[in-house]
Length: 249
Image (cartoon, rainbow, N blue to C red; front, side, top):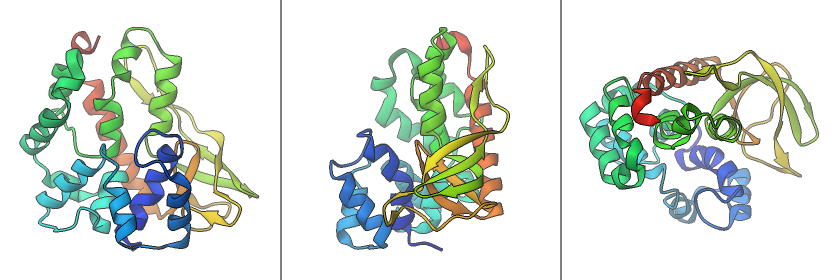
């Protein structure tokens, strides 16, 4: 398995490049990730991802692991695994209360409601449940919130072709049916695989499965990882969709 810090960096880089989270030197993060350099500097850089870090701590503690950047913990957060099931609703609720109650404002009760409905410390719950965009969808603002939700979640897809620094990938976008978020029909999208000689993940070929975050391919996935990512995405969609619309509106 890939070293935990390197695995985390593969998924953290795309939003960092856009300025959404983490430190200011995204170029250095890409260089370190591509080179596979895991040292104290990279670890310190990754602690700057304040949205994800408490989830890693929560998963690690619930599974009696000392390092939040243990590869098992990192994979559980971004892709999903049985480690998530060991974080009970009370632990998750306490962490969310401490971090987000004041920031969530009127949407806080809906966030709380999602926890007993199956919310887990998975990246897709942070995107779908903590961010305010589902409430915006229910208020009729669709295009931009849906775009952000779709690009910010970790997506899976099948590679059709690799051309220079781009890959054509077949994936399922998020869609809003007027009441719920659902996975739409498979369609082609173009994603960045690297810049020059620098890559986030392993080399790709047509037929491979891969993970995507924002505009980038993060890594090549094994079939079991695809199944996990699909499963935990679907469970978190269900948890958020089942939260009362009157509270989110």
